[in-house]
Length: 38
Image 1 (cartoon, rainbow, N blue to C red):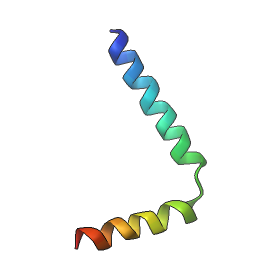
Image 2 (tube, rainbow, N blue to C red):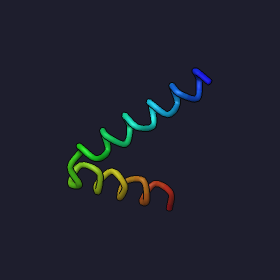
Image 3 (cartoon, helix red, strand yellow):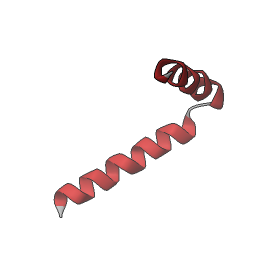
Image 4 (tube, rainbow, N blue to C red):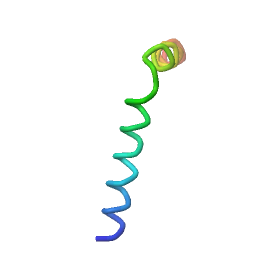
C-alpha cells in the first residue's frame, strides 16, 4: 500500500512538472527523440 502511494505521488509530481514546463522546452526535446528513433 505504501509503495503504491509513493508511486502515485511520483506520478503526480511528474505531471505537475510537465505542466509547468513551457511548450518550447518540450517540443524540441520531442523532435530530437523523433529524429533519433528514425
